[in-house]
Amino acid sequence: MDKLVIEGGFRLSGDVQISGSKNASLPVLAATLLTEEQSFIQNVPSLDDIRTMSTLFQHLGVNVQTNGDELIIDARHISTVEATYDIVRKMRASVLVLGPLVARFGRARVSLPGGCAIGARPIDIHLKGLEAMGAHVLLEHGYVDVTAPAGGLRGARIIFDLPSVTGTENLMMAASLARGDTTIENAAQEPEIVELAEALTSMGVKISGAGTDRIQIEGQECLGPLLHTVGPDRIESGTFVAMAAITQGDVVLKRVRADHLRSTIAQFMKAGCEITELRSGIKDEKYCDLRVIGPNQLRALDVSTAPYPGFATDMQAQLLACMAAAEGTSHIEETIFENRFMHVLELLRMGADISMHGNLAVVKGVKHLSGAPVMATDLRASASLVIAALKAQGISEILRIYHLDRGYVKLEDKLTGLGARIHRVTQK
Ligand code: UD1
Picture 1 (cartoon, rainbow, N blue to C red):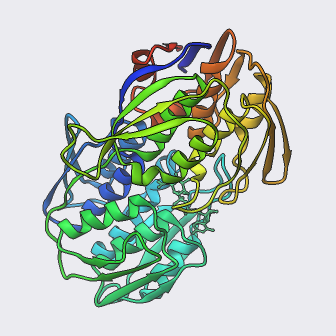
Picture 2: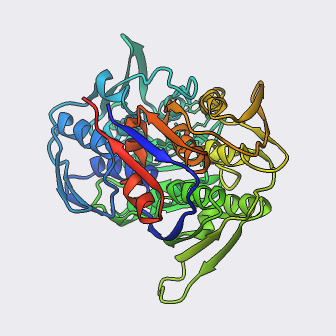
Picture 3: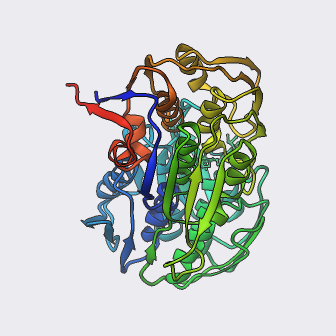
């Protein structure tokens, strides 16, 4: 297993390219299962989670070709509608094939994801939605077996108990090939939902309200090819904001969506960062370069995670690592997942002063973090350890970095380009 070795204490500076969004690519990939035509997706990040989805597709009998950062997908024929345990346990988002498979082929059998490092994460919201569309759901042998009624899924009015992101995506895809109209209320409003809506629109689906809590989808009898270019990853962007912040850095994130980063930008500015949107030379006004200058001393914050547009749970670990080295006491509350503080125990090993009170972390900033061997436990927790290591005195070794490879493209190369002392050690 590979590990990262980081010597802390170096200021980051320079430009960094932000890759395509992982969490936008996965549902867009799943949506290609809705059509018999060949689909083309560009700016797909080269990440283990994307490779896991490609493996699942190949297992389904779908042809996936990679051409640089483009994926060309041909789902005309499939050989099975089953997503097996060995794939789903690697990546929970495999559950995104459920909606499209049931909608197009009338049946899907997907392993239940089970527990994961950051909490129970059930899929009841996905299943209730499919049932509202007339599907029959059977849970047995650790699998969920979903069958569409004769004549296919029917449009329905679905009201979510919680605004589940992948739940919203699964049902948007299912509704795209259902008979009649579907409304999803209390829908998730994340930017990835808007991207999926754009991709489905390219196939001929009529969708309104994506990005609000009420989405309407007009089902179609059959769909054309999916053509989409994936937008920049807002969590990778936020992670580099945190890295610049903690190292007193001066970093320009190239071609990002500042509108997707509002709550992250607001919190890091409150903590003392100077953050500027630069637009010169960028034609498309949706994008900008983001310059982040970290202060001599970060200030403490009180932050609760919340669904978009609130502060993202996927940025909680990175912010917490920064607060471990800030002046004053921070209160960081996790409201989305019940067990998402695995990084805290590792940060304590680096000299952080953090106490846990249920879902609230009380973080007393310390003057110095110290390098230590630490263990990555999940994707964003791993990123938080890298952030702490960039600041810590001495050498840190981060073990089990396969988690990082799931969600960050060439992290050590990008950090080296910014002046960090970091290298990967490949271990057998
Ligand atoms: C997605 C993101 C993940 C992010 C999360 C929250 C992808 C591939 N993953 O995960 O990075 O951390 O959104 O922003 O996009 N819930 C239920 N029943 C369900 C579904 C969810 O109770 O059927 C609960 C979950 O346990 C959690 C909350 O709803 O407490 C939100 O989860 P959800 O939005 O579904 O997260 P994911 O879509 O899995």
